[in-house]
Amino acid sequence: MLTPSPYGWISQYFIGFFFAYGVYLPFWALWFEDQGVSPTDIGLLVGIGFATRCVANLLITPRIHKVEHLMPALRWLSLASLAFVGFHFFTGGSFWLMALATVMFNLCCGPIVPLSDAMANYYSRLKMLDYGRTRLWGSIAFIAGSTVVGYLVSIYGSDMILYTAFAGVLFSLVVGMRATNPMPVTTSEQTAERPNLLELLSDSSVMKFLLLVALIQGSHAAYYSFSAIYWKEAGHSEDIIGYLWSLGVVAEVAVFALSKRMFSGWTLRTLFVVASLGVAMRWGLTASTTALVALVAIQLLHGVTFAMAHIAAIQYIQESDEHKMVALQALYNAIPLGAFIALMTALSGWGYENWGANVFWAMAAMGIAALFIKLDRQPAAAQPLNKAEPEAQN
Image (cartoon, rainbow, N blue to C red; front, top):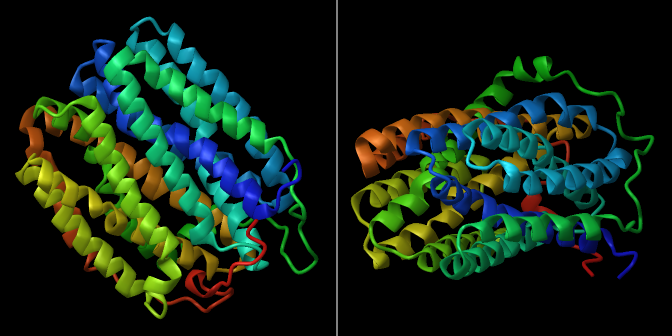
């Protein structure tokens, strides 16, 4: 317990961080709305958060390229994230103070996702854990966070969004202070030199990968920012909204847990094609109806639009040269999951204010566009994700 296995350390850290993230993604917009912020300004604030994560992952994450630096970095970032969640209590409804709190929080939490993924990939290469089974604990925690906060907000009000996120980050900090056995260490076989991001961006295969993932994951921008508001305006309560978000992540958990069995032998092309088709179907349905039965089906598609695409992206990264892994994860989180979602969030804020639910049709079109991007298969440098056997998972 005090010295957990790598699987124990990473899965428990995922639990704390993604519990807080399960509060942040679906409900931060509601907190902004309760502070009197307009939909356009909510889109700007959420977009600023994504943009900040992009900058953090371009400037901070690649500097932490040695595996022995990952754990100390995660501890300091968790401590800073905790402080800036608390700072939100003192913004007093000021747009500029809320913007400052958003920037500082995302500057700290942005690198946490690629760095914790880098630790999981490091031990996955050593066959000490399976990525899918480790990452699913983060998804389970996301469900818990969105469910709990939806219930608490419906009873005690929107300030519970901040309290619940604070509790999740605090848990990740506490469990992250422990050491694991064995600790991550750069070996003689690994290249310790930090890769050049500009050289990676000049690689056509990398650019195709980033564009493909940007279209699929960027299509979630309106969902992350305005689905809670959209469904609330349609008459669904906060606790129902929380349950819907949780259902989406239940589908995500199922895909992560069964990824080896479900996708064994699937090519990256197949994974991305299915995810792209799921995007077109999901957001087309979202634009068309708010009936509860349809929303259940829509949320189940999250296992396709997010989880399947994420598994394909991680497999692409794991198959790259080892010294490029952290840099590729930084680019993956900075551009598709940062800059592009920031842009789409800002645009969707304007679109939602002017077009309402029709903004989701634009998200559906991104899935169609993704079908036309075909990745160049890179030489296998590591064992693919769905072939790695889990070991020492306790």
